[in-house]
Image (tube, rainbow, N blue to C red; front, side, top):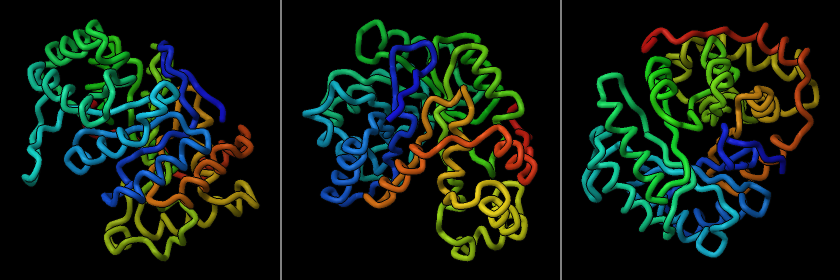
Length: 307
């Protein structure tokens, strides 16, 4: 599988990564999904300490133990939780980050993390202190690089200005084109990569029929799309843009068209989903004309908050 470089780092990741949040809590099945992803050429695994209160990291750790040198391993920090207790609180403090990384390393059964990401972030945080924590972890060799997971343009700009982040994980899809307004070009200009999450927009851009959407989406729509608008745009994509292409393929190839995107991080709850995602990522790229048509059919959305 084609690999792309994350920012100015020496991390080269498969153009589709596995978002591990969806692998579930049944160990045998979860490990099989990760193994299948690796066998199909995925080398980028993205987890977080918060997912199932650390259990997700434990599953990833068990799978990669014998293949660590072949994996680009990413996890996240900032959501403070206690195992066995409901809920979590936001804590981007240096003290917490430096303690939490030790727990992640133990669960992941490794002595370093390739990409450590702040799992959120606000302008009210002590950003300088957070950056200091990540920089110290880099110097200590505990992490190789760091990034943030955020859709807040003001937070992203602050980290680009003050830190040495190599990536920003953000939601991006045909149905959420907000990053196109300014963020993608801004990050590309600073040699920082996007890790695109949510490429199939909660399954709306998968091969599952739109009529099977959740009651919430049928009632409230998705972002600034009503349900009726979703039906219209989703039904028009295969017929007007790329006939004979599955919707998932169009969705993933749309994100991969952007130079700033290093990897599309897609979740999977079954081996079959992994296989379909990999097939879609390995398909023929969309043409500039097809991208133009998709943009005519879908909405040019903008971030209304955190500007």
